[in-house]
Image 1 (cartoon, rainbow, N blue to C red):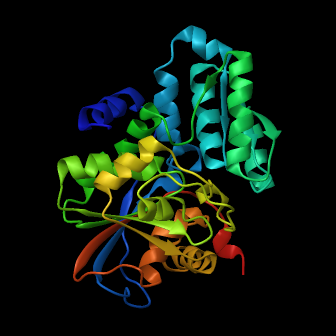
Image 2 (cartoon, one colour):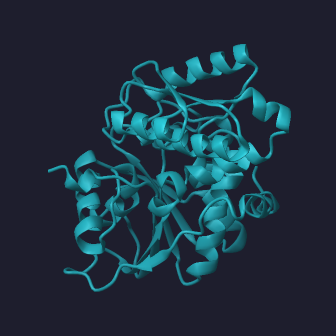
Length: 314
């Protein structure tokens, strides 16, 4: 398990290297918020360096490495955002970086990775296939493999976001968090539950990639036969035991949203708030707008976890 001390140590280590992102109130809206939420705040990790929360975990992992390991380089697999975080972290410590991208990662992510100086290798149809190739390449090269979600240092780095939310929005009693492999929600829930156990943490997954939803139903980590969502950064076929155990103990519920609901939430963020979010970045808000959240009188905080232009896709 990842403890509060681990997350606080991570915050001290990455201070000055990542941004403390703004938390804004979703008010002065053209229509009332649906369902049980009476107040909504948005934690804008879309404004994080590299465009998503992934910079937190990747930077923390990189800063734990001795210089000799850094010189041998960093290798990872990514749907795009984790790769950007690792590319940023590699530049920070002077390490060469190779990112394996699956076919479903957009070319715009590959171009962004190249701008950060990373070498990009396309491999496989989905993240899991790219990940297998990245692991093999790291072992062969003697480089450091940086897991996208199942690494204690990465999870602790993502958990620093939970510390900020607990400090900045002490009235929040509901936290909405998108789930891909489970690194973000594992870290954030560990931090928030340690500080404020009564806060309800709800994870949000795509209907086309219900990795943790199905694992929690089965009581074990399961591998999906396929993923069908366009939100490729939320689309591993399998999580990991580390993440599953943390989520099973700290997350109150996981709900599913469709790609259309995420797209509509991305539009809502743009037209109501002026926030540009990709599908995965809008997933937490989609759960609220689509009526997936139960309860009464909640004061909610939703993490907008990644920047993008999906709001402009009609």
